[in-house]
Image (cartoon, rainbow, N blue to C red; front, side, top):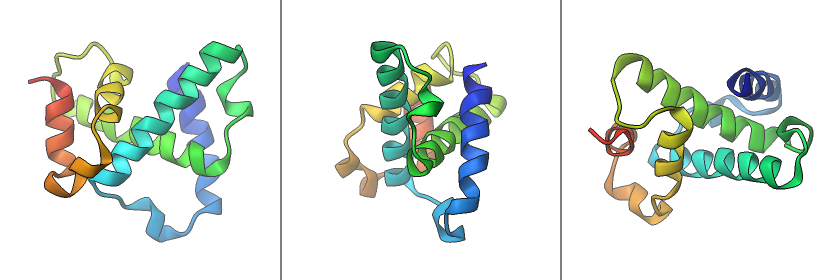
Length: 113
């Protein structure tokens, strides 16, 4: 249910973003996963629906992270129990580490295999 809500927000926000924003590297993934973790933390702290307090840019980032991680998990088994745990691991990685890695390496590292 949480995933469906974020996916809906992501799809609605795509109309407001330029096409070039749809592609991203490791920095984009790290930033996007930080955003989804922040959205869920805010929702839990304030008891509001995350979708009502999230702007289009934040929704796009959150949806990007959820989509990339979920797609990776469709093809590979991970030690993490769900997409959120894996996104949390990615969010903990400093953005300064991004130039030294790739999206695939971040996903493998966060998967724990």
